[in-house]
Amino acid sequence: MSEQFKEYIGDGIYASFDGYQIWLRTSDGIRYTNEIALEPSVFNALIDYQERLARAHAARGEPLEESQ
Image (cartoon, rainbow, N blue to C red; front, top):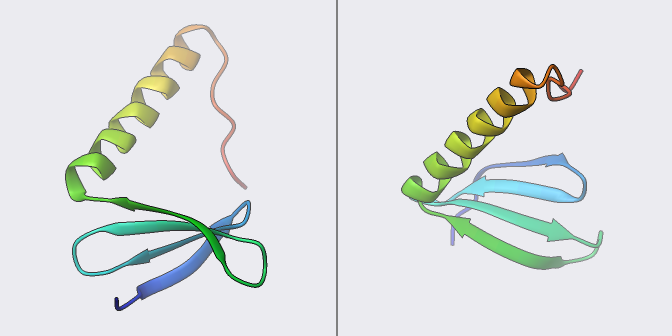
């Protein structure tokens, strides 16, 4: 599998793209230890979830922390 745009996104998680799915992998510094492949509809559902979560927190006056 080709790993395009591979990058470290934080908390031991690497993201890459195979031309169709976004792959999330955890690493112990030596090898990948877990893998999740997000097809486009699942990735979009994750984005929707984050937006709903942000709205719910904002409605309670508790905005989600933004990364600096």
